[in-house]
Length: 244
Image (tube, rainbow, N blue to C red; front, side, top):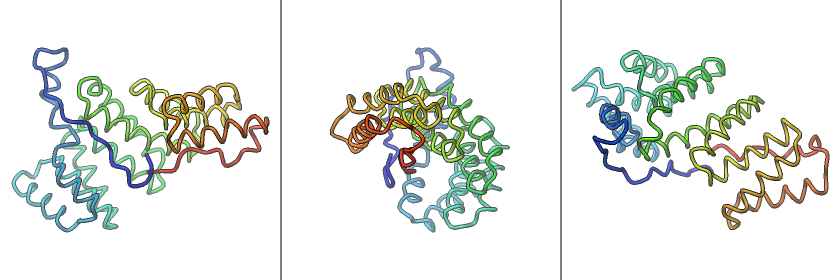
């Protein structure tokens, strides 16, 4: 996703109590990123004062409201109160360690605070908690993919291409037509593995999925570049799509 793109949550689906895992999902439905979506929308719109007010009101009613606590941590982070934000994320994790979304934001905070080891550890927990939910709820699946793209991007910036490849492949398993994942996987094959053939295959898939997109245009450009420049070490600008 490019800068300013929303997470693109799909329309919420009703839970089927008799479906496989239905009762478990019923217990975990409050983990949906849709909960307190009005606060998330206010944060996205930069209306931090109102978002903070709503979160604090919710916490006054229920001091153990880990979702409101997480959202308030996001507000503080955006306002530059990083220490207070991390403190809230940690507290929310202690209250409800199975809530995946706090782990994601805590991991992101650690990364931005230049503590990658802690950040990646939180991302690992986030993925563990989400894996049980992804197949059961489309909203969470979309949100998971959005977060995985960020995690993958961070791995790439740290030059951990092996881990980035694993994330790309996970996204593709969840969404086979995800152009960004195919494109980024091509980057990994070319830069990390120096495998022009596999990179070419992934770039071709990007074009086949939808040839009318910006990603398809970039894939076409780099396919042509690879044909003219066989040495992968010379293509320094063939990188992951920008952070969103």
